Image 1 (cartoon, rainbow, N blue to C red):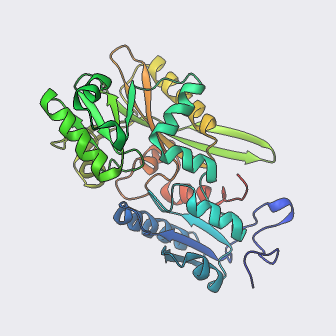
Image 2: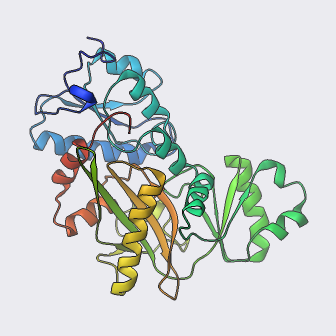
Length: 336
């Protein structure tokens, strides 16, 4: 069977997805990005959940450059995406799956591409008048004149980030003036660009958003807010703090005023909709001392590991890990 044809029984009339316990589900994990290790953990957990739920034909597939052939050979009917970072969360694989006509979970091509790019995310936020920290994008051609470069950058403390990475890969918090230019130069050299943000003093929070579709109608639910208090030496929620047990204190629900809670949840849903996300996502924010939240970034394929944020928020909302995985599975679709 060619899964790129109408012979795929998981795709019904008008492209609607039809999933049952015997559907051949490919849990795509691993991949080629710098977040491979985290993806392996997310995929392994999701696959185990599907097996517990009775999806007997769910199988793990480590994504390589031959993924199109592998999906065809294994006659995969629906894909559960557990990839993070480039070549999985950035729209490239989503485009391939649309060409193959294989329904998949998470956001579509455009939303995935926008969200993985921090500069493009900020442009969308700006166009919708959604708050985010003062941001400067630096490219290789901008670093020749160090004096001019410094004039463009915000005051310290500041956050220096790669333009297109996730899981806090390559992110630095700079607190000393003398360290800012060297950190920017190193980031530009390693990642071909840097994004420099004004540091927001206050709680670091994240808000999960779930989307339910009933025909053409869409309903958006913001999950209870998770406040993150990292214990890492970096002084922020870095890669080590995210994926090492005991390195972050989770405050759930976050210790915020009711007004700030409602403001952050509304901002998360508005950001989700502005970027055109689908199914589920996680919106990371900082809250300043006045209670104003600012959007940092959007994760269109949030981690599903034992220490990940989205499952923790869902559990407080009364959604078990297995129920969350099944909910994500049933959000699979095409042409998002």
